[in-house]
Image (cartoon, rainbow, N blue to C red; front, side):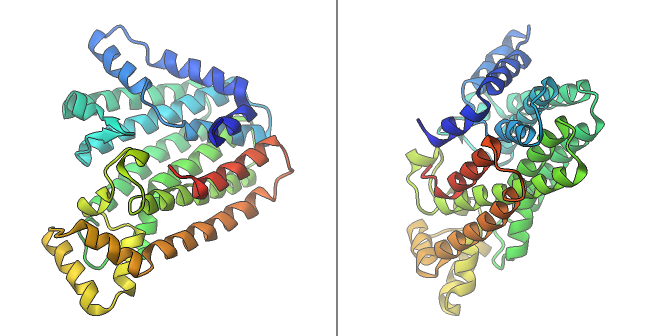
Length: 323
């Protein structure tokens, strides 16, 4: 049994309820839409976002029907954002399989994403919890803001580390932050605990994204479900390359920067060697461990429980995983 499956056992009955509820939300009389939604349903990932909602709720109290509804709302919004991202990035793969825009077309992907977003908001409103609904709407705003920041940072020959981390904080980390807060809100946790768990979610999200960016320079295509070094090919300057550009001798760095300015990568393998040689990957691992320490310190503030143990295990998984 993999580590995520073990962690899910902490909230196994509630996670089963979530799964059933999510499937119900994808039911429709529209035959064309039904076909696409079924494709989406059977190609979901590890379900980390709803898992965080459930674990945060259990850490602060007893999981309720509202918790389940909010977990579904979050996952619907997340799924919608992925459909839109694949269109924006012209991505033909999602988790190693054809993306919706590749299987159908861009128009279908955008419209189905809009449908899922509307379903997400419908569920959020249905909980009659304005604080949770506010967090859900903040997710949509920050994801779009982060995507725009990333879009206008592509192919920059002098990337700044602060901008890179701001992109992460507005995308992956913002979603993890809100998932933790929404879970706590759903069981009536106080504001301090909600914000504290939100910070844990942010640090956890940063760890996950740093690991993904590390993988882009290390893993094989079949292990991560997308082409290796795809970020570099698309002009996305992630931390490993950013740091290598900063550390390398000027002559080497200028050669790579010139390719970025022209939007023409001459030799992708040479970029990989450049990153390894100039400690881009080493630095990325160091930053992951720094954020793991920050996140661990937050969990230690809470009374030990199966939920806190599960969150600690998820944190370790974020930086130790091989896929």
